[in-house]
Length: 420
Length: 99
Image 1 (cartoon, chains in turn cyan, green):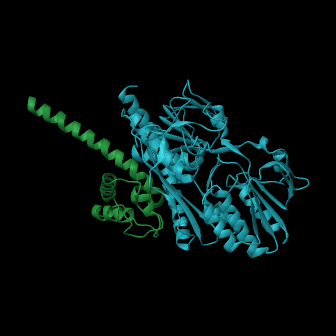
Image 2 (image 1 turned 30 degrees about the vertical axis):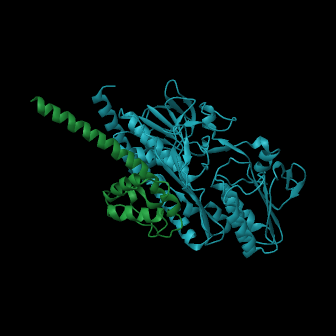
Image 3 (image 1 turned 45 degrees about the vertical axis):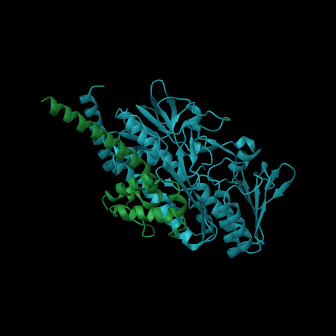
């Protein structure tokens, strides 16, 4: 491409971006952009933002199905009535103001040879670099009867914040006092390692306060709590004894919505509310685009650039990646993956060689309305992958309201850092 | 003439080297934004705003966290992940950001 053509193009991109900002959803869908991002979660939104932040001459199109971002972090507090859907939902106007062209449609196919993305409503957008941040989809077939029971509204995962979060809250509110809630946790790796145990804490807090004769049974496919185990178990025995019962090595293999039963390998357990989280894999578009490399589930990447090891010119972020050692599938990590990719894409499009980037994870979990616990780690390039820096990182000394305050501060800050 | 061309080339190389170093520091500092806000501009009053804070102050606090001289909920664990050189580079970078 000649330089003046490039200038013309990027000028057009910027003009279209500002028009999109004025016209909202009514803007025309562009046919090309230097960078296309699929998925507007923590990973994709942050990548789109930071490319514009670091090089406003690069035009960026973000393809996202939904018109608002609903945060998984803090969504467990909605289940207990400590937060609201409104509080965890954010629009994409902040990205539009930065000149990102947000297209609300589904990316249904990637043609890596032609370097273009097909949209669900028709039309293609071509790119120079593609960033795919697809989140997760579920391997429903590994839990027999799941999909049928979910269609009947008898079982929920609520592991993508949104309509199912609202429905799980409603079911908890409608349950009789003396009822049993079943929370089933899949084998690791899954999105948000401490998430199931934070959810257990929030459901137990709600039951203890509103329905004290009720019980929560946590059925964990893993042998033990997979994250912050000591801190969670201490909170459970101090706060929720008699309400919350935990069982390890209790993998759900089936669900029967008619009898409200979760089938484990050796026994069946009945409940009044069934919150069964099925095993995950990288989101559907990753499979379609040929980005899945490992166990038919995850996408391996070069951790210096987040470029796919399967498809050149395509970067993969967030929960969909084959995690580096000791790296959780978390919102903080997806946001940091996005910054690695944004830095690499800005360098590559400017003819510079990308350099590895050191990144930080921090995950807070609430164990009561005001108290939280935390795990943190620092990861750096070791010549092969990203590994935790020796001597760094760790967990909270104890649960505290101070950590709760920082947890809320983290949530508000990462929402702003990713979306505005 | 020859000298001025040489000077120009030398300056250009120095500038691009400095730019690469700046962007490496900028990329490393971006990890802090999940709690401290984009470019260190704090979103809440519960965390320290890093943008525009004196570099000596930021560097001294990070070392105090790292060496266990200043108690913290989290920063003592994160600061241990960085070298003296990285702490100084990030402190200078945040100090140079608009508040």
